[in-house]
Image (tube, rainbow, N blue to C red; front, side, top):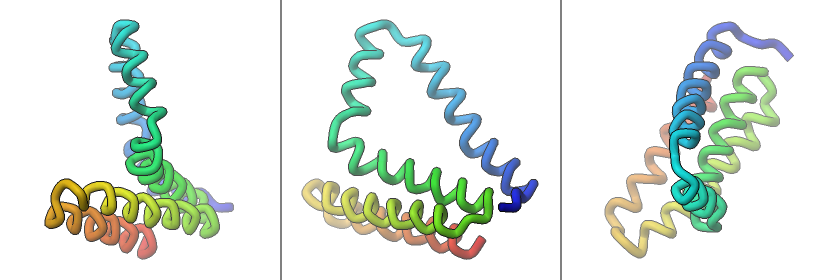
Length: 115
């Protein structure tokens, strides 16, 4: 397990800044907005679409940081499942825009595999 300094800086910037901003915004919310946000984040729709994509990318970047391919591959697998569910979900609304999602996720996976 070897930690690359460049990957560490990228990991901290990519995950530290958004996490800080989300926590700060959450703490500024009133009680009703907090409960609404909790309800939205716990919904199956969010969990199986953007939640899986977020967790998959976190695992892939964490596996890249620690140079552990098994964690990186698990993250890529979760991103593929999220891409499929997002595409199926968006297909009902707009068929052309729903094809953009798997292409963008495929590009992200390509760069994760390449690094």
